[in-house]
Amino acid sequence: MTETREGRVAGEPGSLEPAPGEPTPSIIPDGLDTVICFVRHGESEWVAEGRFQGQGDSPLSDLGRRQALLTARRIGRRSRRPALPLPAGPPLAIVHSPLQRAAETATLIGRAISSGRGGDALQAPVAVLPEPGLLEIGQGEWEGLPSAEVTARWGETLETWRRDPLAAWAPGGESIVDVDARVRVALRRILTELATHAAPASTGPRTQVLGYADLPADEPWSVIVGHDGVFKVALLALLDYPLARFWTLPFALCGITIVEIRAGRPRLRLHNATDHLTGIEADDAVTRAKEAERRRSGAL
Image 1 (cartoon, one colour):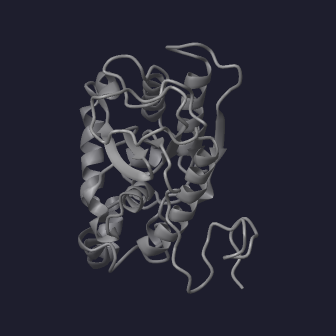
Image 2 (cartoon, one colour):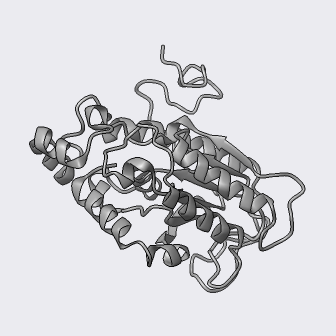
């Protein structure tokens, strides 16, 4: 007998996990119209130091807090041109990885939206909720180590990880197949909750072609704040792309990615937008160089 993290037996009513041998249920509820806004956390102290993070709980750096504040302001003022493709109304929730670099970023976004910056103040603050399924990919023995040391000690494994992430991963860490399983459960939980707040189906299907109509102000949507590696897996799962394409989708620090779901079908509306960070990035070429080096190293 297999139990879920919520204590329910897999396959029983209320469980989001299938029983052994049963097909995996679809992530997206049938007919759902909604929007998901993915935001990677700001720079952490370990990112600034060039260390592998994984599930190591490094806090935001000073620069990371500035990035998070600018991102919070951008989402709080999402209707300002160029407008983000998000509903005008408040999100149902801001769901985040429990790690503090994501939690702090999520809290700042919640404050910006709830304060009504760029719009009317809300009667109640937006819920900011931790979701364990959004933890970054565990990097095992690599966590906390500088990239140079990981390269020196596990060079062959690291090179395989960069080339074929299904064939190798950090010693003592998570495979992306295992991560995919927990991420799908988390996404189903988030989308199922959105479906309970969705309006009844309209008289006809909405157009799949952009430019014809704005998003309904009252459409349910949520913000998800997390990490580069786990977001790669989440976006592949939503778009039904193979895990072998893991390295295809980069997520910049405090980049904004938006997936719109129409009648249960996902489409990528915006990926890795960082225009809101231009002011501080222009003054910090060193940070950009460090982030580029992390992408080359395979660090998460």
